[in-house]
Length: 219
Image 1 (tube, rainbow, N blue to C red):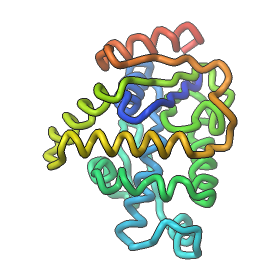
Image 2: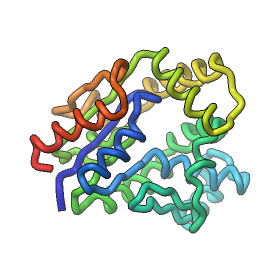
Image 3: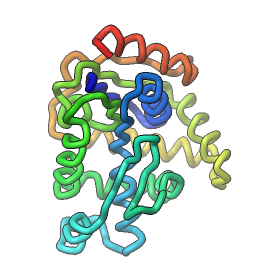
Image 4: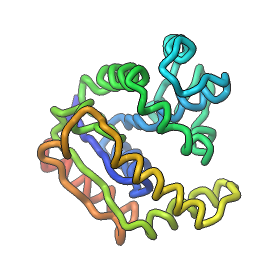
């Protein structure tokens, strides 16, 4: 048992790392909903299933098994795909699948079941508005473009991904535009959301700040 913490925010503002470490600090489960969409995108890409609401994709949704391990791993039909789903090609394709109502319905239903008992840090788009509107703490992380570009570039470089700083910046700009144009099922930001600017904050500072907010709300 415990409260539900919903974390949303712009691309590369620190959501995934902060949410994972926050969950660990509180003894909560980390629910990385973005990883679920990425895993589905990886499965579809491997099977050459296009991002259209057709019978092939519907069949894939019924057959594929995506599991978020308590320690933060992402399993696709039992395979650890935590690194594969973060590759640039999956990042560029995930929006086309995530935007489909067929995919979103399946994922949201699964996410609600995972977090129904509380004690979760749920990270991803529309967490506080559609998936967990009852969340006791709703946070939106933001940061300026250059800080986000450098963070993402350093992350990819550390993983051995060959990509230019300019390409990373353009990828983030494109994803920002796509996010602004998407309809996630709710009008405007969720009620009671707290915006946190992480531009000048370290990951440790982000985690400490959010942990303090969570404890104020009963975590």
